[in-house]
Structure formats: C-alpha cells, structure tokens
Length: 321
Image (cartoon, rainbow, N blue to C red; front, side, top):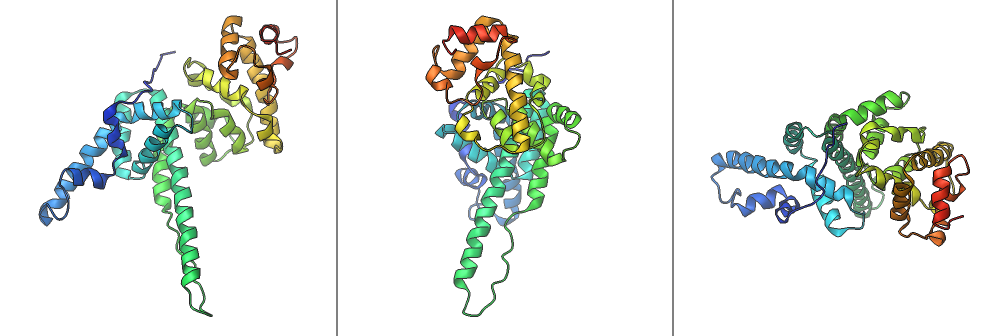
C-alpha cells in the first residue's frame, strides 16, 4: 500500500487562518469606505479568493497538526475554531475541494473530511445556543398577557447539507468502506463513522462508543487505517487508555462494541513482534511498569489469557499480572 505521509506541523505564517475574511480585506484596505461602490464587488471577490486559496493550501497540514494534538492544546483549539468557521462558506469549500484534488492524498482528504464533520457539529451547537438566547430574550421582552411567538431558528440546514456533501466526497475510500460494512445505517451515521476512522487518533474509538451505533470493533479494520504506522498506534493508545469510570452504564450497542473491541485489541497486540508490542504498551500507559494506572483502564491487557501468548508474556514483563 502506498504511504501517504501527512506533515503534522504548522509554520508561523499559518496564523493567517485565524483571520476572518472581513479582517483580511480590511488589512488590505478593501472596505466599502475605501473602494468605489461599482468596483467593490470585484475587489471583494479577488480578496476572498486569494484569502481562501491561501488557507486551502495550508489546510492539510493544519488539520493534521490539530488531529495530532490533545483537545486541551490551545494552539490547536484556536486553529480548529477558525478553520471550522471558514468551512461554513460554500466558496471556501469549493476552493478547498479543488486543492484536495490537486494534492491527491487520500489520508489528507479523510482528515479534512473529518474536520468538516467537526465544523458541522460546531455550527449546529452554536446555532442552538443562539436559538436559546433568542427565545429567552423574547420571553423577557414580552408584554403582560402577550403570547410569545416561536423564535425562528438561526440554523441554516442548507449550510449543513453543503458541508456534509463535501465531507462525504473527501472521506471517499473510508466512506465507501463504511458504506459496504454498515448496510443498515443511514448516510449521516455512515459519514460520522467514516470521520472517526479518518481521524485515526486517540479519540477514534471513544467517539465510536459514544455514537451508540449498532457496530462492532471490526469496523476498525479499515485498510488505510490498519496500514498507517503513524495513526494506528494512536488508535491503540486510545483504546488502552479508556477508563472504567467513563463506561459504567453502557447501552446494548455499546456493550457489544466494547466486547468486540477487547478481542480486537488482544488479537492486534498479540500479532505484533513482542518488542513492538512492549513499546506500544509503554507508549499507551506512559510507563514500563504501569500497574496502578492500568487498574483504572476499561480493557485489561493482563487478562488476555493463554490464547494470546505473546501479549500475555509482554504484560508479565511489565509486572501487570
């Protein structure tokens, strides 16, 4: 399989992503007050396309950087927030899609597709908060005995549909894999699963569990993920770091998924060279002798049993048994 490496670093000039289109235009002195009215539209479109093209060329690298960082990383959070805002604009999505076609990297396409899914979720949450505030304001401002009319939602479903269509297109091979293996699910659920797989990081499996969909851990056998030496170890680590306390009450779907996940990770780790298996466990647990930490974990590698001899020997070497 071709190695589609993705650079997960940002450079100083990537700070341009944090600008809005309006602030970018103002920095170039293109405003209704500085440009003749009959020329403003032309200047606006030129500025917009230049700005969005610049960001589109940086998007693969920035998304890979965001995906490689914990959710608490301030730089990654700021970049994600700004990028998700740009992704609401259909013009930016058009320019971004063309850039992804030029790059022709399915891993990058998947990562960007998963980020667009995150942008949809962010947009929905923001509009729900606005709707709530509008409803509270309407209630507070109503006169006595006056009927409060329902407040029109701020959410534009067309924006969500446009982003969803682009996300499905970019998720490409990953979505096709999910489509083949999750026949009974709707398109929206399939896009969500494909996005989690395309992320290929510590949050992939916890997101799949939280989705509460009728799937098993076999969905993790997506070819691009299982052959990716950069992303797969992070998925393993995410599985091994799942905490018991976070999964006290599981639905039927979640219970079946976790049961299959336990077998899946045992099989995967046991099939590795034992030195590599040890390295992965140390990376996941943060120590060569993590007995106290492991007690809190949902999946106990030490309980794998004799049918997984390589994994069992590694856990014994770490004094987990």
